[in-house]
Image (cartoon, rainbow, N blue to C red; front, side, top):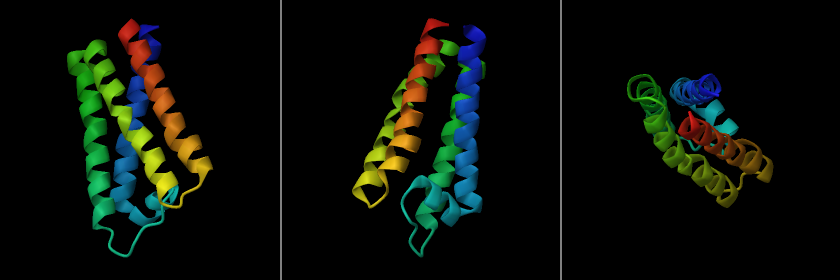
Length: 120
């Protein structure tokens, strides 16, 4: 179970880094995938990208240097982000499919990851 816990956490953190880099390099495409159309000024999208990439790197550093328990707490608290994203998508004209199929589902996988890490 320890290998699965570490692997899932690593994949989730790498995915967040990917999302962040995608927002930095292709902000309008990334915003469409997020579920809310982008406005003309993409500075806020770039901020999101920078923060997402940083959070993914922090998660990887915790996993490697501090271990499963610290990463579990990080993953558990970071689950608030996709839950909040789902609410944002719903409140700003996005589809329920994206809100629940992308953001809510991500939050559930993160909770599973946190549980596996606490058990490791």
